[in-house]
Every structure is written in C-alpha cells, then in structure tokens.
Length: 350
Image (cartoon, rainbow, N blue to C red; front, side, top):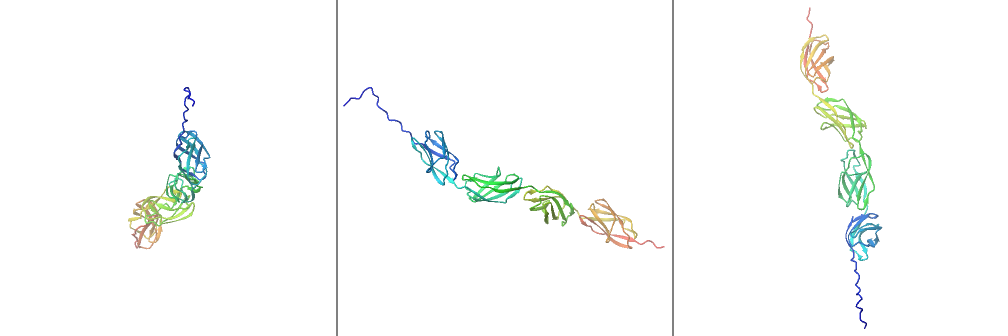
C-alpha cells in the first residue's frame, strides 16, 4: 500500500446551499386574469431559478435581494401554492388566492346633488375585500360593505354623469352611472304675501323644478303643490306668521330662498266721524291695525275710494245712500276686518 504524500492537502467537501424560505406574499390575492405584481418576502432568494403559482410559472420575476422577489402572477383560479426555487432547493409554500372579478349591476338612487352627500346602495356580486368605490375619478366619501352583494356608499361632490366602479383583489367592475343634478333656482313668488290663515295659491317661478320633492314656507311644508313645468310650480301656502323663506327641494338640492310675508288680519277700532250725510264724498278716517295692505273699503256692500295713510289709518270717501246705519269694513291681504257702524243723517227739513 502506497503511503500518502505528506505534501498533499486533503480535499474538503463543498458547502451545500440552504433551501429558500418564503414568509409572505403581498398581496395574497389577485384577479383571475393574473398579470398583477406580487412581492415575495423571505430569505435565501439569491440565484432563484423559478417562481411558481401552483403548477404555473410566474409570467416574470425579478430578484430584488436575497430577501425579496417581485413576480408577475399568471392567470389562475382558486387558491394555489406559491414557491421559490434556487440551487439550494424549493421553498415552503405560501397560499395565493385568485379572486373572482366583482360585478356591479345597480345603484339606488342613481342621481343626487352636485354638492355630494347622497347615500347610495350598490348591488352586484363579488364585493368581498373591497378596496375602493369610485365615482368617476373621485373616491366615495365613505363606503361600507354590507354583504358580498351590497355596498352602502356616500357620493362625493361631482358634475354630470359619472361611472361608478367597485374594486376588489379580483379586479374592477364595469361602470354603472350616477347622475349629478344642479340645485333648483327660485326667482319669484306671486303673490308674495297672504293671510296668516294660509290657503293662498302662490305661483313659484324659476328653473330646475323637475322632480320636486318639497316646497316649504319656513319650516312648514306647503299644503299642496303642483309642478306645472321645469320653471313653474303652483303651491298652496300653509298657515304662518311674519316673513318666511320659501324654498324648493329636488334631487339636485334645495333652492335659494324667496321671502313670503304673512299679513295679519285687519282690525278697525274707530270711524271718525261715525256719521255723515246721505250724499257721496264725506271723508271718514278708519283707525285700527293691519291696514297697510288694504285692497277694499266697504260701506255695507258698496266699495268706495280710499287712501292708506299707515298701517293704523285709512281715509275713505263715503258713498251716497239712504239715511240710516251701515256697517263699514276693510279687506286686506290678511283677510276681512270686523265691522263698525256708520250712520247717514237726512238733511234737515225746511
């Protein structure tokens, strides 16, 4: 047996590379169509020769470092095992799930004011793990996933018709449209005043009245209203007092206010003088309250000429009539006053 050469160094066995370790896959779910970026975290990735999603190879991958790989997911279905292969072996598996694409079929209501704030209900399917709800290019002010088939969302401010979409790890839905409406504009009320008892028919003119949902006098709804056209509404004033803002509300919002004034019921407390000749033309001063909007002064059933001096005084010319008493009253926007007697005296005999 030949002796070993004392000058020869014994050969050492080469080091064996450890298999890579995969800790997380981010995101852990994606669309069935694939083609999305997935970040794999772990260690031992140097020299990676394959990244697999179940039986399929990644569409592409880049080893960023020994602890991170960015891969492009291939198409697939269900849940699959993601692994990394290096010269040291194949890593453990981490699950990646292919999510079904969501579907959006309806939005209720489908319109609202341009100022936003409309609460809408979105219906469809595949709403699990929703990541975004958008109105056009703007995110919903807020949203809540009630179930895989329903989402409650709040519309942001916007204009015109915008596509609404829902995004999940499975992708984005096709659009369903939401329509932003402009608030109505109120220009005039005719008449702009009436009795405190209500009941006055008022014509409102303006624009954007289509779909009107309310006409209000202050805090009180109109007794009734009819939308005659996009520019005209006929409403019946409710009972009220003072000067109140009238507004029109539609799905587009609430209009600017226009003032409607409730006139007080007139009261007459005195006639001066309280008697006069049977001939026409005697001046009589009526005193009281609520006389500013006087439209008629009557001696019995006969209307006569008059002049409004103030809210508390009106001067009228007594019409001709036979001798004797007659009741005098006043009609204003606020209604008809009480009556006071006026007596015509016969001329003295000769």
